[in-house]
Length: 96
Image 1 (cartoon, rainbow, N blue to C red):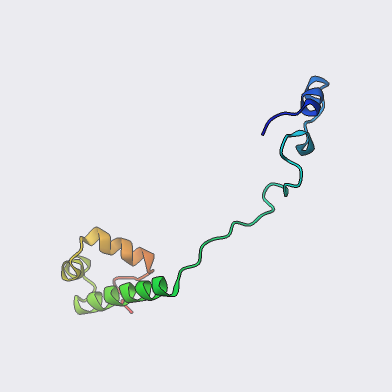
Image 2: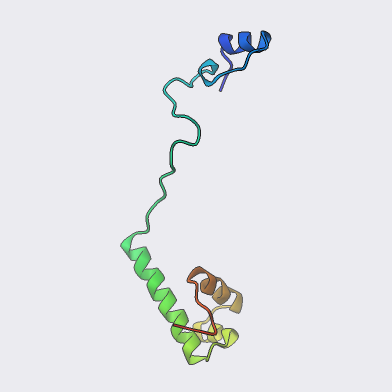
């Protein structure tokens, strides 16, 4: 935002510069008063996430909780499987 003449005058006179002194501030809500709108997951994204989670859980069950073995079975690196476990909040020792 740019300083207006009134803001410059307030600074020159040792006063506090208020929001109303700034150019473009008219009609703006106070900072922090507007909540961001977060995008919602589509039904398809939710179904994909559920499918991904169930595949991870089933692989861990078949591999008795061994992450490296389950990752090989799923065709991914074990680090990727670890990320999926964190994403879906799955404990490899307690699949399900």
